[in-house]
Length: 255
Image 1: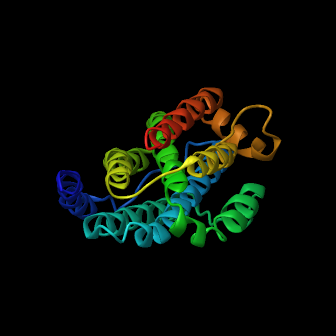
Image 2: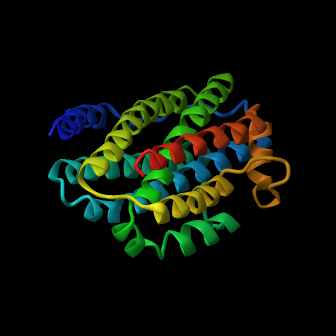
């Protein structure tokens, strides 16, 4: 199948990227203020948690796409990418900022633990709404990492900027692959109105997770961290709306 051929071509690129992924972090933070150090450690912890969440969504999806050995093989590579991203961000945070996340946020408890900890069966039965959620995060991360990298360069965190660049390349590949997965599902399986309903609900939830508007009290610290580093939290919130719309459109085209 031509669609599967496109997907199979992506896997060798992933293997090459894994071999070149940054492993040594040597940034000097002596000149950073205490506020900036706290902001950086907080943001990196949040991003690492989000990368881990994507891995949790992908694992049961391997079974949902078991009708295609190529899709399943790709997803295992994608899972390895997300795992590597989370580990690298945590390692950077520990080595450079001496920070280990110990306190869970409200979104950690409600979204990551409660929601994502109890949806495996639903993903197996109806993977498309959750594939849309994954696509949302991939689209949103494109804008997020641009700002993160710019802030890292401003603060002289060149190792972090290099790490983010490597992650960006992976995310670009992920966005292309997820669109292929939508096409593969359309060719091989069916989608109905309930998938649209679940997609709308799930996208609302994941957009709540990244809400950095001034009205999102539960994400107040995340917004504060962003503003401290010169990251435009309002622009990111607006971009999340664009990402949600594009993700929803991918599902609506399947009906």
